Image (cartoon, rainbow, N blue to C red; front, side, top):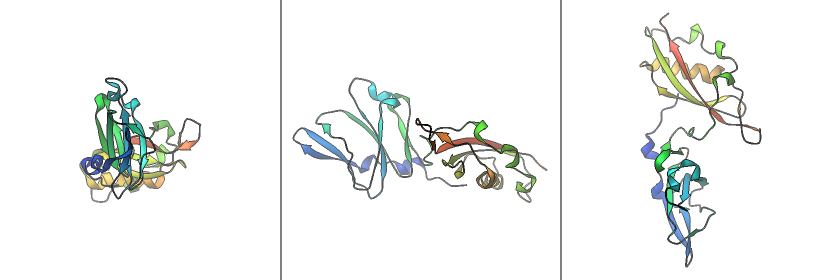
Length: 199
């Protein structure tokens, strides 16, 4: 299980500055000492940047520059997050930072989990915990089908049960990986839950 830093701590718009390229154009630069992800929309028509699909994403290295050049007086909508967080775009031109880095990965269906019945066993129930609860979690799954990390999204109310959930899935869960547009295996994310009952 991994603890997450509040999303506000990852906001990085303050890292983005402008460098004059020519008398009527400029570039965007990451002035921070860490990589950032930028989601950028150039307002070509009114209301265009209220739709997430009109944003283009870039990973910009520390002190690095975006490849694009922009026109002076061009209206830009920019959101930025410090790595490993990613920009999570919403409707209406709203956005935030997802500290887990999972927001933009394809979601794996429950059917992609190959060995569901054998993941949680009686030995996983924490000793001395006499409580029931439901733990919801999210995992990053690599292109090899193995979990890379686990985050608790809704706690059962018992830290021991939450830890046991992530520990079991990290050790035993195996997935059919997600596919990219070319049909190649790629990273994905899986959302699941475990209902713990008193023994």
